[in-house]
Length: 149
Image 1 (cartoon, rainbow, N blue to C red):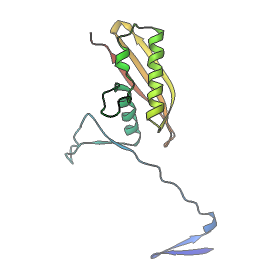
Image 2 (tube, rainbow, N blue to C red):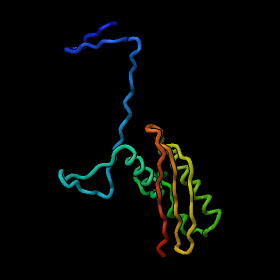
Image 3 (cartoon, rainbow, N blue to C red):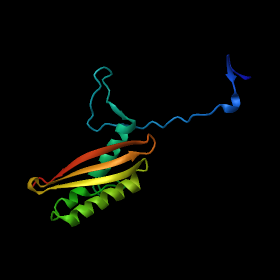
């Protein structure tokens, strides 16, 4: 058995078999609902998978030209709400969602996009299933697009 001194501690064992385990990255994001922490009286931040889900949701509800200096960032889904409901609109919704997530969210891999047409309520239900690459975890984001007129 070999030994190794590090500061005041001694590491013993077979050092040839030792391995380094990489630490997973942690992600954080600001919760746009601006909830206040009851004890710290500070805005609650989102961590890890909740932060990634929030980023995906923000990308999907953003329209083109809403963000300064990033005019192509967004899925432009609200613009498609006023198109005639049908197969072509669903295909355009699916393509816009896939494009924005492939181009602007490298932390995920989209597994499926489900679009539910609810013409009686003038809305679309969208469920995006994806896998977070870093955590190897499957999750989903649900959005309801509703036309108000």
